[in-house]
Image 1 (tube, rainbow, N blue to C red):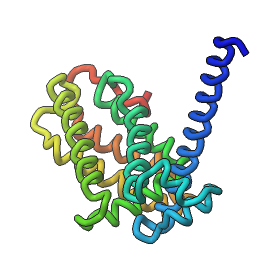
Image 2 (tube, rainbow, N blue to C red):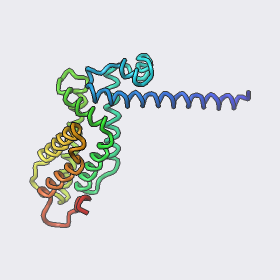
Image 3 (cartoon, helix red, strand yellow):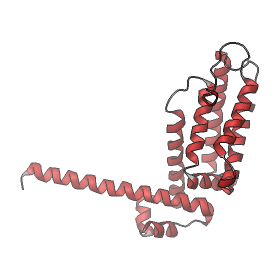
Length: 222
């Protein structure tokens, strides 16, 4: 066989093996989401996750060093998705930022496994010994800081009235969003989560927006 053809064949085989490995890794992550969402971290087992993936526990450990590593990888994948959806574009106003939040909530209704897992793990991670305790503590600090930054920028631009408690406003809407998410996860058919979040954010926005000037209206009022 000519040397170039051998090299091309080797490269193709390499790409194929990488593709298989990536697909198996995604399968493990997706399966872990369901297990962590049903049983939490401590009651989930690598053996059951591997079984549901159709592989051995050793095969799973080839991709993830431990159950803790798998958990943190699942959380990192979920956060990467949220960051891409929420922060990939700079919003033109605080109202546009709120509209992006509602779109993310709408997308989450199509990812019920992620929502269930998030609710279960947040509750578990209140224990400082939980492997995700540091992750969730840091995550809430990052989200809060970003939200406060958006509010402060909107105050400086004149979109929102001066003197508002930016941190208090941000903490309130984060708490409402998490609370509605828990209610939706328990009984999805009884609650239109995006609509409830949208209504709350609209009322909050109306209460803090500047009364003079031509402020941009939220997309839901357009």
